[in-house]
Length: 175
Image (spheres, one colour):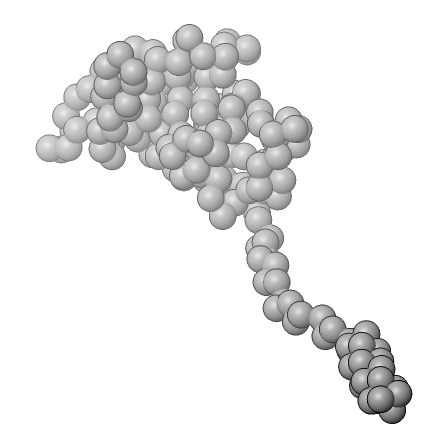
């Protein structure tokens, strides 16, 4: 009987200690793909940047808004007319900070409907030449009455995509 107890104790010990010596293999974690950010022409820009509406000489303070699909500019004296069978618009752009004024005549690219809580707003969209940093960009802008807004110009994704990374914790990175 003692041999059976000794044999049982030996078997138990072997099984117990064999289980303790079993090493757990670590799980293989697949490599994580880190997206490569392509170099942008403007680099990192801030929440507010100077923008030049060519041929004007003084910059406008522009709100950089990644939530806005399109860009917008504050204009006055908006008049539509026809030229060579196409719809055109004339308007005045005045820099509120410097007083510089310029009258533009542009062909209307399209009409934009801006969704508002109280009522939708129709706006003319024209192509403007602007300078951001050292880059001259031809982009569509909706013509708006932005007198209730702090900034006369809004730069949206139609300009930002592929050109800039926006860091809202900084401003005036372009000069």
